[in-house]
Image (cartoon, rainbow, N blue to C red; front, side, top):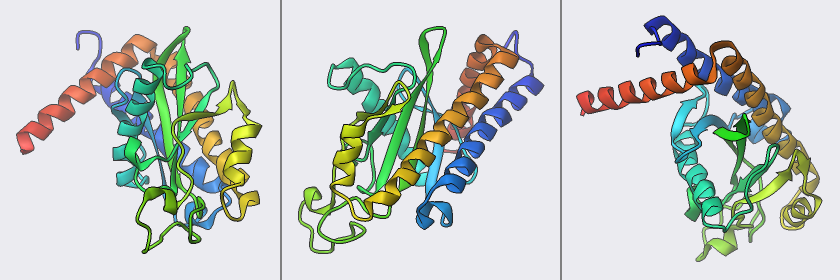
Amino acid sequence: MAKLDTITLSVIQAALQQVCDEMDLTFSRAAFSPVIAEANDRSDGIYSAVDGSLIAQGSQGLPVFVGVMQYSTRTVIEMIAGGRCLPPEPGDIYIVNDPYLGGTHLMDVRFAMPVYRDGKIFCWLSNTGHWPDIGGSVPGGFSASATAVEQEGLRLPPVKLFKKGVLDPEIYAIICSNIRVADQRIGDIRAQAAALLIGQDRLFGILDRYGDETVVEAIAELRRRAAEQMRANI
């Protein structure tokens, strides 16, 4: 930490957490569904561009979402590297809800957006929202008689729902054709995307103020200290 003093490290840590808190707040305030807008059944986080591991999380987000989003983000990164996903461009937002690709149940829908600096991905922003319905044999997706995941609703692999900032009308039509009360989903989709865009703007503010190298150094030091504390507690 030759260039990074303890106070600056603490300030950057709090700033990254505040980015996630503001994403959470934006998501809840803009969402149409009461389960998100009132019950706050959602989470937002910042994740590594290399392996999708967690960098920062919101203080009011559901821990289960924050924890598993690093696996779904890693899956997106790996599928892109393996040619099973279209490569990202600025403004793209991937959607995924597959429980077998780092998810929970199908109603927990994840968005993941790459954040670019100088033409390279600096990190990923991701969030999860519990949609009221994702299709399936019963409203809400909680079928006690289901014997296969396909019976619980629409299963989405990582695909670009937003391409260069524009909602893909064909993928959106597929989603709406498979869920109940489809006209309300646009509110949740727009809220989920808006939260990521707010997070990107706030993150740019931190990077512009302290410099990319200083923030990268702070993230590395925070993760080193977190690992050290966990080993000591164990």
